[in-house]
Image (cartoon, rainbow, N blue to C red; front, top):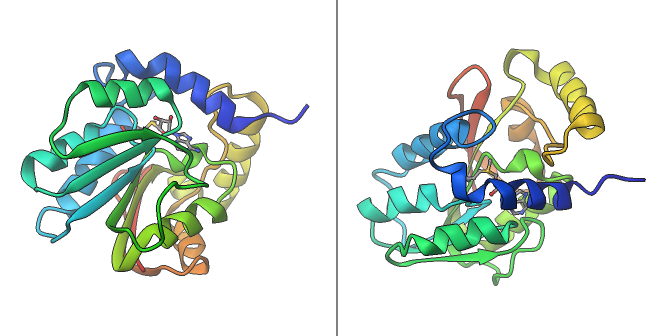
Length: 210
Ligand SMILES: C[S@@+](CC[C@H](N)C(=O)[O-])C[C@H]1O[C@@H](n2cnc3c(N)ncnc32)[C@H](O)[C@@H]1O
């Protein structure tokens, strides 16, 4: 039977929600905190009025950003438990909703910024989530993604990791990329790449403009 990676991710993160923020290991929030801090720093001197965080988890990124910068913040996540946890933080000017990265419940050209931290490797398909992020961004808006990749193992690593995760993991991990591949995927889906870098050996970030 074909594995349903979206359902596996939903179950995995429903179970993690209440311990996610406080458990600083790679199976929980360790890499998320690195990626969120990177995005937070990147946005420090940027002007924006609206921001969507896709795969927002417990709202960790929006919590940090909203303390520094007044804007309308929306977090969207597959896991209802993650969304409930994020809403329980009562973050100013922030709303958290249940939803999927490949069918965003927003009009075209809605947000100045769309972010995605440590979530993309759970998306079974690459193009649709990128097209959706592009669609809901305003012209000139930025999509900032940071994720765990295969670092120096590049293409071969991505193929091997993808295969192993798809066969054996129960966490919903299924789509492992790396810096150059994500840049290429984003370009194919309409983005102009304005920045790309490795934050650590295995964590990369790419910024694309609509
Ligand atoms: C590793 S956590 C990262 C959470 C947060 N962004 C961070 O960096 O701490 C991945 C999150 O992506 C969400 N997710 C996975 N697949 C998704 C999908 N297809 N659509 C929306 N969210 C998804 C999970 O429910 C989970 O909360």
